[in-house]
Length: 405
Image (cartoon, rainbow, N blue to C red; front, top):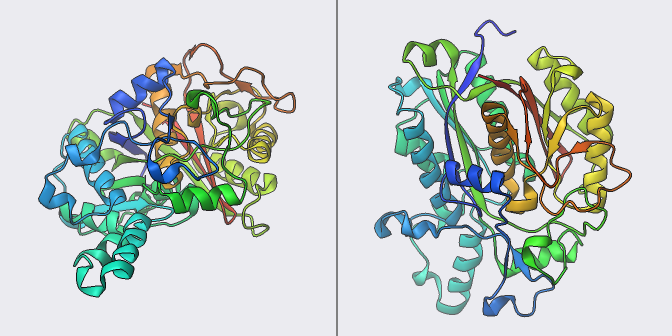
């Protein structure tokens, strides 16, 4: 193990299609609640998809108007989530130079980019917001959060598609292990529900076009899965050097014991079993754990036919079929850059509470999937370690290993 020892998780924050905070989101996962809803907006009438997973709570109800107007939607989510996570951690008193922020995103301020372009085309340059550039910058969420917390130890932004939030946590782990920070606020944010993005993902056949009960559309590992449901959200974890956290008497959810990032260098959108296996095996090696030590897997599992099968094969090859597996995108939809952080949070809370949420809509497990995927009822037990996977377009593979407190 690294000389600097454990990296503990002391605070959680979330804003998702299931709830306005981490506690509500987790309770909804355990209840099997779906955050997927039918698109009723006028702009959605001509789209090939009819459902999405928007936020459970309007962020504008949680921010002052003067603040909100300066921020892109994904930046708003990051600010709200950071405040929750920081207070949940007990607002650590840490030297500013020893506090860092790492927030990943897949698309950044794409809503601001599209909306400001519309304004420019219709009304000219003088009608653009003076905050247009800060709103569209992918590093905007990390920058705003660093200013909110007074973090001088770095504000970083991994942009690795759907693996961004998980890669941010891996980067936070590295910063603390390297002795460059005592506390890191790490995770991801994404807010890109827009007719353009929905149409673009539908055009590449990634989204489900099922027009039925919205809550039944996202069905990871099910034989009838037909594509993912686009969602939005944010999740942030407060990571601390173990000695620092214990010295201040912090409440601990568990630890980030290992992480690995690999690239497939193969295809811009296809899943790569070999690359995923390397990520899982390297994360285990980093955590100094063996295959049999992993009791829970939070699968990336977006509900696409090839993607779910590739991950199932990778998990079976890398660690076997004994772990209990869950796929919470069946409830939240796919929140892109935020998904990895929410997945890590869910895996950690499963260890902390001794309960793994059931995968919603898993009526008939694909016979090619040999994993023990929880369906129907939650699984209770006692597990010491969990794996959380995140894979992104471009061949980005990130695996995190979490340990119980």
